Image (cartoon, one colour):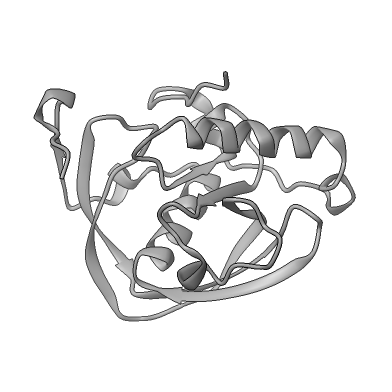
Length: 174
């Protein structure tokens, strides 16, 4: 099982490398995507995962449809339960920002408030190597920014205005 690396691992602070477009449909990248999906699915509270979080400095992230449903992530017919973003670039962000609560699978037990643009538009390639553009607001725009930060070697705690700790025993199911 692919493990999610934690703060302190140097890969989380590296600028990730672009994936050659010709490699996207090849077995290596497809295996990495499967490993990422399996790792994210194993996390009950996981919404998204970037390749550096499994120890690979590549410009890839995935979003789970369990959090980002078809209506919010503009599902494409025939997709599985994940949205794949390869070589993503945020091409537009709103000037309007708002404080948002964030956590991270690589910074366990820590949460914080961070200012994020309320809307963002991203260009990327899907797992078939097809380029696409998506714009969104709210939680999806927040995820675009959080995951792209991972690809630049940044963690949410770097820009958080405050950070708090929650022990696993303090968390409750709603």
